[in-house]
Amino acid sequence: MLEPNLVFRLVAFMLLISSCFTSIVQSACNRGCDLALGSYYTGPSSDIFSIAEYINTDASKILKYNQDTVPNVQSFVRINVPFSCDCIDGEFLGHVFNYDLTSGDTYETMHN
Image (cartoon, rainbow, N blue to C red; front, side, top):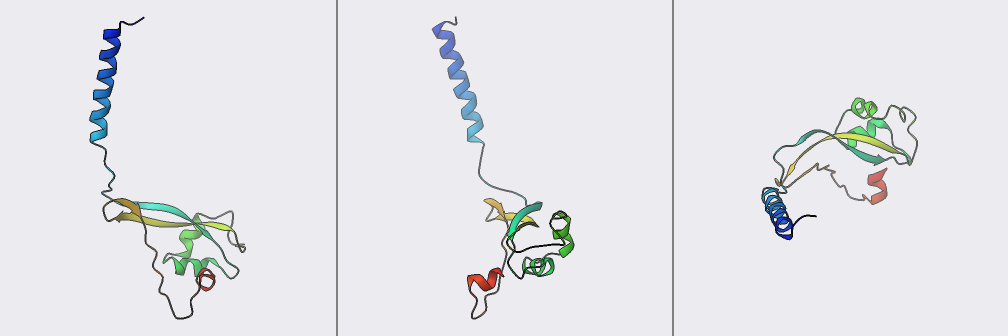
């Protein structure tokens, strides 16, 4: 059995080491990523080409990550959509998908 003095020294040493590592960890990003995969749930009138246009990519890139699903894309199935990610505000990795709203757009019309 360890002596109480030795146990105290070991615990103090472990706390000192852990405090050194926690002080250098920060929540920030400094570069983007070449590939990330997101999920896209298809709608009744979805096809690979309209999905590719919607997320601003090539249909061939979507096909590459959905070989078991495509070309028979059915409604209400999940497909993988590849995209690159960037540092957003220097804090986290993400991607902003832009969509231009037009008069009369609803959730249903934007999804389909």
